Image (cartoon, rainbow, N blue to C red):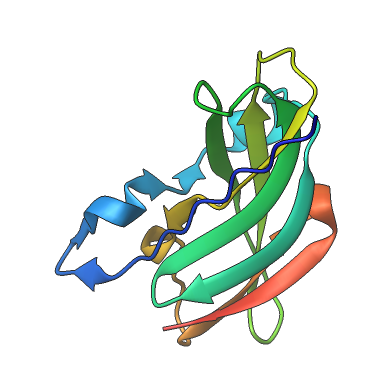
Length: 134
């Protein structure tokens, strides 16, 4: 039996603090960007709403309740127009079940802003890009 669990999250920015629904924050850490090990997952969709990047992904597990996920930034700003940043989504999954679960954690990405009002975010382990305008 295959079970799918969908969660919906939204994010709105209030002053300098992320909203309760967007408590995940992209982490600028080149070492973790390069070396963090990740479980297998499939990215279904990536979207931005305000200062919040949502990654809709699926992976095998029991119910996904023990999963931990993180979004790491390489700390490099690539010179282009608009500039670019490389991100890596990492899933920590120790669940050994055959259910296929879908989640969509929102990440506050306001700390990734650069001059110019726009940056392209490259999700390198998914070969996708999305433009973040602010």
